[in-house]
Amino acid sequence: MTADVQAQRARRFLFTSTAGSGHFHPVMPLALALKAAGHEVAYAGAAAFRPAVEAAGLTFFPAGGDRNQDPEFQRLMAQLQTMPPGPASEIVIFSQVFWGVNTRLMVPDLVAIGRAWHPDMLIRESGEAGAVIAAEVLGVPHAEITPGANLMGGVLFKQGAAAHLDPIRQQWGLAPDPTLQALHRYLLLTHAPPTFATHDIGVPGAYPPTTHFIRPEFYDRSGSETLPAWVAGLPAQPTVYVTLGTEANTMPGFYPRVLQTLIAGLRDEPVNLIVTLGRDKDPADFGPQPANVHIALYIPQTLLLPHCALLVMHGGSNSLLAAIDAGLPMVLVPLIADQFINGAITRDLGLGQVLDLAQLTPDAVRDAAREVLANPLYRQNIRRLQNEMHALPDLHHAVALVEQVAAGPAAHPPALV
Image 1 (cartoon, rainbow, N blue to C red):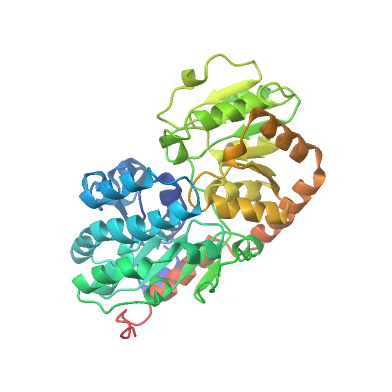
Image 2: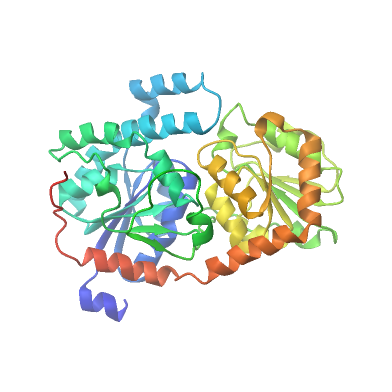
């Protein structure tokens, strides 16, 4: 236990996130850092995360139930099936699912857990707003960890949030929050380099004044996976890594079609091609491949990316930040969520090539990869961001910020107007 913790006292921190590894992974480094600093740490969320949470030595509480059984969620999913993928459909998902259904289902569980476990502070991932309402009901402060790489994307995806959050607030005896002041009242931690995080995407507004930039540490080894031994024996030619992350591969509209196109465009190039599918997929979906193609279920990116010359992917923020951390240029094919924003910024900053899904062909993939591998400007641009990221304060600073908020006055915020 550190001297600072002894001087304050060990506190209890309750973490929470929405379902999906892309939302869960970003909260774990801080959770583990607080545990290492001598605090008690628990996580409340989807049952699928119990093994990883408990393996890390944290307390797990199930929360949020099974939204697939919720009639409103079922209706919204049917509506979304009629909409083409893109920013418009993502705003519907965020406003009605994240801020509506998910919050409504999470708040009762988080309040019950809080009344039984007595946390000093709740710490949430940005897409999980139930922790804000639960913290106010419990009279404790809260903090936010944003998984998104661009802060103005968070502003965009909060469009319409108050219309869904305020009725839930009122059910719990809280005043309406039409300007969403409550969401970021105490502390927001972001892991993106400021040049990327604050890049103008044409959205009016500003990111919260409680924002602090923290150098990321990546949590991608929640299982027993290690770097395969065969990576060390790859031929002396560029290694290209292809992934669609953890979410898009669950969607029949994208899997396996998008990966098949990416593989077709790259397998005949003079590269080592490594493709990961996800822990629940089958490499047989892609049939026989040339000897230079290696298809695996899951490889921790923190172990693999240092061996690569190019990352071809969907543009998810976790993978994008890992690429910046490794100084690795990219080819992006945005599919969902903030990937469209990340793609636009990647193009603006010259960090790689960006392909439109509607025009995705093997030839387009091949040409984009050749351009990025051959042109040193992409690597130079990404290394500038890498240096900026590596100069940010580390997790010890984030721990100190959280401890400061938790030790502050009791969290009974003034009435919202």
